Image 1 (tube, rainbow, N blue to C red):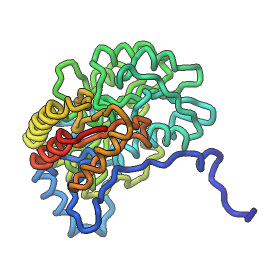
Image 2 (cartoon, rainbow, N blue to C red):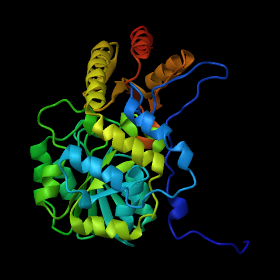
Image 3 (cartoon, rainbow, N blue to C red):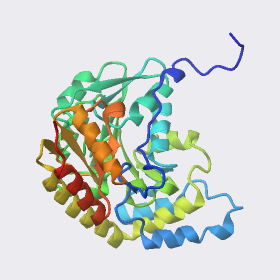
Image 4 (cartoon, one colour):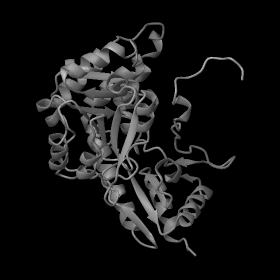
Length: 362
């Protein structure tokens, strides 16, 4: 065999992340409903801030994302010194794993949790442990039962991707109370802006009173997916550890300024949440029939379950033929009979409903 540089053991065994499809057939105009992007685009204030960066491309951004941390602290009532920003929330998940997982360590996640968690865990030399869910909802009891003496992190996407389900604040508190103090609970609140239920907490309350909880957020779902900006709020000791190893300029200037403007544009964020709730609930009601089940969602997408995997494949192809691109969740999440449909423009939502309601499954 040729003598050449080799990756660390286990790297080539990691299944890479597979993004949602983004193109339809050649020459066909596509409506992308596969990546849970903002249904209303970005805040006009964020767009204006981003455009203003063009005259300063030769200058490094401020390394700590101070302008963004200041905006986040102001709007959310947080301690800015305990906020760490990243190149998307994925960047922060990688940093957390690098800091707290080593060879032979374990991280626990729910059965259908975000598919990046195994990647970051295994890349750090650890092993991911899946805790069974109950009807596509994370189970606190299952997660706690999966924790061992080797566990260093518990990842909880809340609401979860791709199911859209969530755990209420009392269940998250019960989860934290059941963990050893040396196990880090990572609350991935990527879809927090879209939650409408009253018993949900983004996790700030736990971060404030516990030394082993961090909350991870993103701007990708609220109109800034192209800018790649995420942020984390955690104990001072966690922020200190992450700041020691993160890239010195890991958030570009356009991302910092656009995200700061988006943070302060609370009216747009509320408008986004109202629009999403209206069409998420409408589409769920429309599709809850014809051999389809819609899993109740608190995110900006719904997961539709079909009686058989073949029905899900047929539905995907029927939507694709109309230029409507949704996400098949079989290969990445093992839900072969499911499709994940992002909430998008009104015309697209009506078109999705028309296609699926009129399908005949053999």
